[in-house]
Image: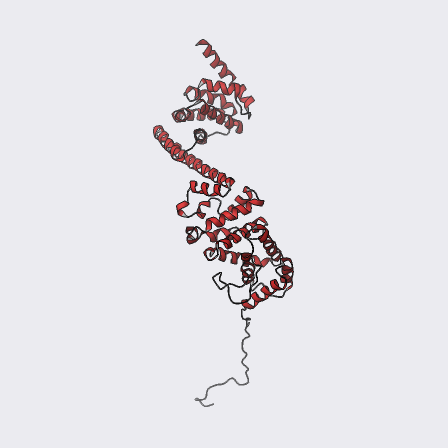
Length: 411
C-alpha cells in the first residue's frame, strides 16, 4: 500500500444510535378534548367525571391544562390566566355563582378525579399556586369563587392538597399591598368555618406555617392588633379575633417571663428589676394578677431544687423568698393579689410532692417579709376555693394559724 493512500475499514457497517423521539406537546388538542366532554354532557359533573376517567387522554402529560379547563373553562396562555385559542366550556368554577351550593359540586368532582388519578394532585397544586399568585388578574367576584373553592377543598379534605400551596403564594408583597389578599382570606375563613371548628382552621394554618403570621395577610397600613380585631369582628369572625388576642397576650407573657428570668439569673439590683418589670407591665398592658403569677413562677424556677434533701429545698426556697420579697411586695398590692400568690404556692406544692411539706414554711416566710397580710392568710385558710391539695395543706398550716390567732388575741 502506497504511503499516500488512506487506510479504510472495509466491510464494516456503521450503526446509528437509536433515539427516543418524543411526541410533540399538544396541550391545545388536549384542552379541546376535555372541553368537548363537558359540552357533550351538558356540564353534568358526575357524567363528566365518568367520561374523563374512561378517556384515553394523556393526563400525566397535560395535568395542568386539565385543571385550567376546570377552573376557567379552557386552556390559559402560558404564565397568565388569559384565555388561549380554542373552544371553552361554560361550566367552570369562575363561571358559576359565587356561593357554596354552586361550587361544592366542582370540589366533589375534582375529588373523584384525584381518587382515580392521584398523581394529578401536583398539577392541581401548580395551577392553584399560579392563579393565586395572579389574583389581580381576576375580577373581584372571581376571586371570591376561588376563595370559596379553596375553603371547600380543605373542608372536604381534598386528597393531598397541602395548605402551604394556598397560603404561601398569597404572600406576594404586591398582592398584599393592593389589598387583594385580605378579602380572599376572609372569604376563605368564613366559608371554612361554616362546617368546621376554629380548632380545625388553626390546624390548617399550622400546617401552612401561618398560625403565627396572620398579620402578613394585611396591608402594612392596617397591620396592627386593632386593625385585625376591627376587620374580622366586622366580618363576623369573633372567635378568630379572640384567638388572636389570646395569642398576642400569651406572647407578651412569654416575653415578660423571659426578661424577668434573665434579670433574676444575673442577680440584678432589685430596685432596677422592679422598675423594668413595671415598665414592661405598662407597655404590654398586662393584668396585675398575671404579673403576680409570673413573678412567683420565675422566682421558683430559679431555685436549685434537690431531689432528696428536704432541708436544702426549704432553705433554697426561703432564701429566694427573702431575697426577692421587695419585688413581690411591689406587685402584691391588694388582698386579691396576695390571695392569688397563695394559690400559686398551693398549686406548686400540690403539683410537686417534694414541696408539699414546704407550704407552711413558705407562707410563714411571705408573712414575715410583709408580702402576705394576716387577713389574707386567714381568708385562704377558712374560705379558700381551690380544692387541689387543700385538705393536706390546710392541715399543715394549722400550727401557724393557731399562732396568728393567739397573737391577735394577745393584742
